[in-house]
Length: 478
Image 1 (tube, rainbow, N blue to C red):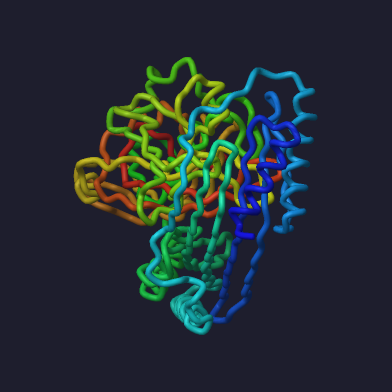
Image 2: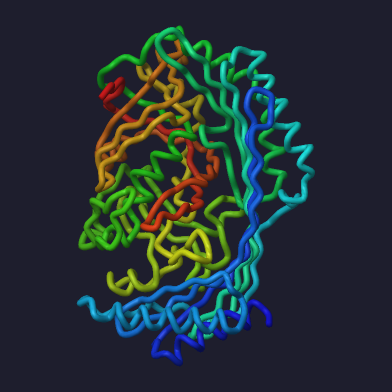
């Protein structure tokens, strides 16, 4: 039987057992990762698994069941069990549950990939990481680390509404970091970010990063940070680099606009949300420069796909337009409860996990300036970039971030390097203070977004550019 046939058996078994709707995903995933430390390969992991996950809806109760058995009997058992769990779930009181429309589709989609990341010889990958980490040690790093990760995922989706979709998504990326140990503290610099850079692309992405070309620089910057002055405390003009803007968007916008958090369905890992659905379309989220989009169609970005795990085709929409909150990340059921007419943001991290609302590519549209112009227009402020730490409350409102490196900005020019730079703020007040925005956008990939119980790891993308904010409290120590 084909994987489509297996999924079809599961869906029919769920319907025969009483489900009014059912869908099934057969998934096959291969993963590979390698770590190096101080010029030596430390770890190589290669994994492969496959299975089927089935959702069934009975009344207003969901059921989910998954098995690694892709036989006819296994698929039938999964469908029947999902329907029985759904029937049991109907005993829990709750509002009526429907699904917003997702047109029945027969389609096939694959992400662009020039060089298969799992086809590149391990020797070439190992040589890249050992060379980069050895260079960092030679230039002053006490601990030099490098890694890459690659995922090759195939999905076959069938629903009782007529969906029949297969997808092949290849993702990879990597990065390096240098840590130095001083008398009283350690400092760390990373490239291209603390977690690396990732996308729905092939190994060409890692080659373009050119990790070895940046190894010496970040090791020397980490050592220079040990003797740099500490970031001063107070309110000032803050310029954030694009990498830090990625996490600012992820934590203070992306999680806040997840509809399951807004509805109170989800609170694990990142809490609920401060947003009130009655204010969708009218709430002032930020300055008029703030335009946030939800766009899983961006070529090569880590949150891109052809169809989500409910069969809804990828499409771009606004989350914030001219500073006003206008859209959410939604699934077919949460959107119906909220009275909205779209889903498209539901995914799971494997065949054995229930799909849930996840960020796709949540990004900030670029502005008219370059970073150089923003610095030139600033008389007194601080530039911070490259995330080091983050903390945000369980309504995604009050936050505090630390960055790897900062610089004074005086009279339109960069001044001294600053160590341990931090800043804090309240989401809407902070975004409303944004008064300059760069046109230098990078679609950063976040491969480690946690959510749910049991926990799931999501892959998200965040187009981001440097931006300037006024009257921000910096130098926060607790």
